Length: 250
Image (cartoon, rainbow, N blue to C red; front, side, top):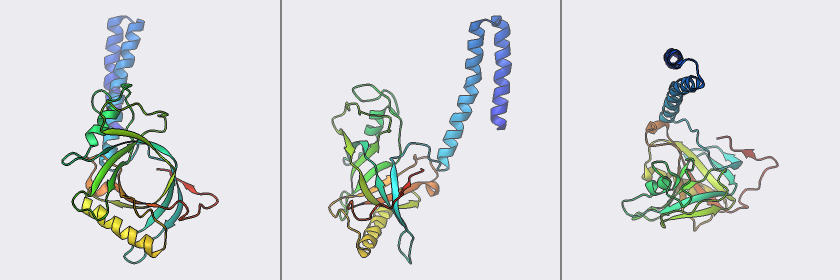
């Protein structure tokens, strides 16, 4: 890009000056390399931020296979039936006036030191998982969770006792995807509508389970470009797996 070319040209000029002043020594070469990397890192970071603003998702997501796709009919919702592989999570209950996000972000070290017993920074994944409790207007959101990257084989112990680590076993979910702002009422309405559709199709659900609200983007993503999903847990045998299930490519 033009910005990258200009930045590299400026860096090259600075590097040549450094090389002359330091006499072409190893130290000069190291300084040149460092100077050249600054604009590359800056432009790469800027491009990543710009992509996130427009809804580009680059973070790791939990792995799943698509067992079935159901198209929207009439006023109904389109949805997928997904079989998720097992994955690790960190989760916390959502207190009044505190949605728990910063506690979970602190554990992985998004800002500052990682708040776990290993002091280990862990990459952010997506989506952020929030439980929505059906038919409970007083406290509809009950828990928030992050999935951990597949590279983490054993989650370090949280410093905050309100955070729990867990392994989610393989499970089957009906998932409706939609775009738009983080409107809890809209998410709940979509979940209720999806539940009614599943019942009409006689697809066995885990009736006692909460809905799950999946939000894939950071707060600075333009609202109309945000990717959101509502998920309802199904019985494992609700939909037989086809011979070659479609792997998630997100």
